[in-house]
Length: 544
Image 1 (cartoon, one colour):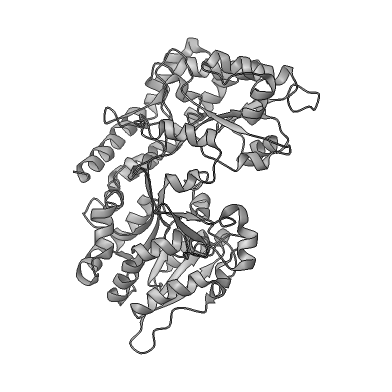
Image 2 (cartoon, rainbow, N blue to C red):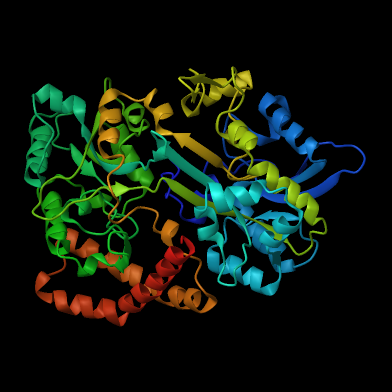
């Protein structure tokens, strides 16, 4: 996802969820320009966050041909939509207030700021309606075919314990050679610096340290200081770093082991101690800045801009790091599976995603209109308009595959806004309407350098071990499970993060390891594993 996760992730906090696919932003007044169908119109009101794209603005949608094309789809269904659009930074509060009032609710509401437990609480109270019953009775079959036949993972991830589906979601799927094709995140090292020094990419963890030292000793950024460093995301659980994966360590406090179909924790894995020792060594040898342990993305981005980052953890196909560096001819090379004596793996992002939430409230009195809307939003034509736009204007078909035309996309948003040419997702995806992105990896290869394409191709069908986006493998928890997880995770995550920090900075002793693990167990680590195992088992059951 677009950097969906870096999005991301990214994401998985409410602010990130609201910003996925360029969403969140401007005015709060109801928007004009809803689809007009004349007599017999089916009318729906929607409470949604505005988009944050500083160039392509939802408020200016009437000027975009792609919006007119979408309106035509609504008109075919006699749909008339009215939007109450709220700035992204105000939306969570507005949503809480409107839901708490329980009266005069819109027909449809974006529930993305609510986690599954909060959303299920609304379902249990009758504040939101099951949409599967609406679609079964009034739909034309498009939505049902999408979630049950075409992309069944959406049903797997949104079916509540009572068998109902209470929200519809954004969906992303990617293929290569017509097979599911996940992307991945790994350590990316400065390719241009390696070439200037005549060095090969490291193949072992020891060689990685030697290369990073060579960057400093040769003052590769030319500022006279030995400040070329490696940066990784040490926020959150501290295990999604790319380096942890060299030691075979899972990527979250609890991770999904898809090979053995079980939930595991890095704290019980063989490579955990050597991983923590290696991270401490990077700090002790000046190759990792201790001030960046647990730092914000903005802080690490500043070091990137200053040309001080010799290696970092990111998507292997990323294209945003190079232009962010204040230097010429910058290139990053993805590397993976460095030898450590443990069985390494790559952080593979699923080839499918189902995320964000929109729900039908109890005040909606026209289920036929809801069915008509969802049959549009999960149609092939909507996906085309959302992900690609208009053929000949924003995309073209080459060798039977769609690809964005030159000058269209994230790097060209400012000019796209002036020309009023954009895929529809830049206007509405993830905020007003769901993102429905069904990509081919081949289309991405046309805009990437060959060394990144080759790396991606070499790992594209590699089996996942502990996949990223753990929630993509979890069925919705029961009310009791949600309550217990909420009671456990805050203290557990805080203790785990603090302990990793202490080890990385040399403040914790391995002599006290058993005490640390005992404390983790006292805080409920084993119970959390048991609950998530139940969710994963339910996910596997729904996939049969």
